[in-house]
Image 1 (spheres, rainbow, N blue to C red):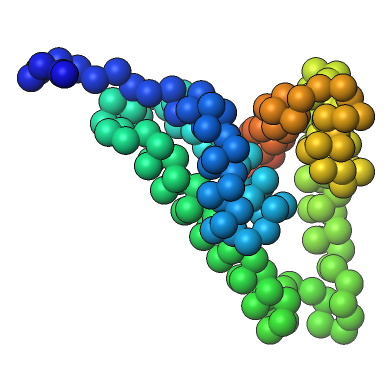
Image 2: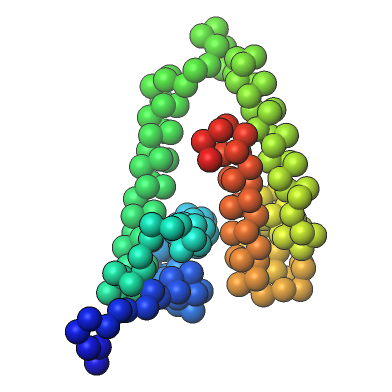
Length: 182
């Protein structure tokens, strides 16, 4: 039992996410009702927790029940993803996308911006270690499942998850840096 005045140690939230991965992924799947959305949410959760643990203002000692904290984080990420998808659907169905009014094709500005972002992402992927780069290219580039990537590369699906999280964090950071918001 903790004595009064004794400081709690901060839990290793990314480590707990990994230790309870299967249970938390099932939880994400029940909330999302989609295996691919559950996988994306688990990656987002790992990235968010890793960033959070490195942020100077975070005091993990205030997390009283780490597993409940992880479940709440995952539930919130599912809701965020579902809202984003609903907003995207509304934009597409109501015509709010900034497309050229005469056609369904993107404007020249959108094409240029897309090409610039793609070049940033390609450069970021090129900077990754070989195995990490192979994982992201198979998963996102060839649209393989995590298990298919693991089988093809002879690694565990957990290792695939870790490589994907690392690659996604790196690419997002490069995009943020290029936009000047990070």
